[in-house]
Image (cartoon, rainbow, N blue to C red):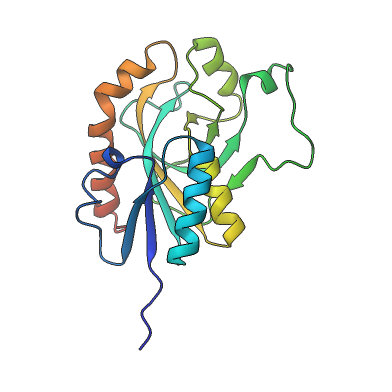
Length: 195
């Protein structure tokens, strides 16, 4: 009898797996993509080609742009959107043929929100307000993961935990919250039968 295809559980880096790297859930293979959309796209494509998974779940932390989300909230990514403040403010544009949005391909038991993936971390409140017109949260890898999975025909979804508000204090706040947020996300995924 043939073994069913594995499911692939990804995170940008090990702390966001909250121990799942040491003890993967049954039926799941666990790996890290690296930080940033380009690194994530390349590594996800490599991992998907090697594992040939049934589906992919990305887990991680994100920043909230406005009051739609608060630190500690858990969400599923409805879509990942490649964007930038310069685009939103008219200083840059993308060719019409370039794909900039990738929808999640399977549902998760958390409120769904659009997730923006800018080219770098947003450090200003003005930038957060601009990007809030496109999404509720900011993440650095998700467009790369979703694009690689879409190209391979593998359904992907993402569960994220809000670890900070986007703005001048984001990094300090993220440092203080990301490990606890990751643990809470993994616990919720287990409790709700996803893992």
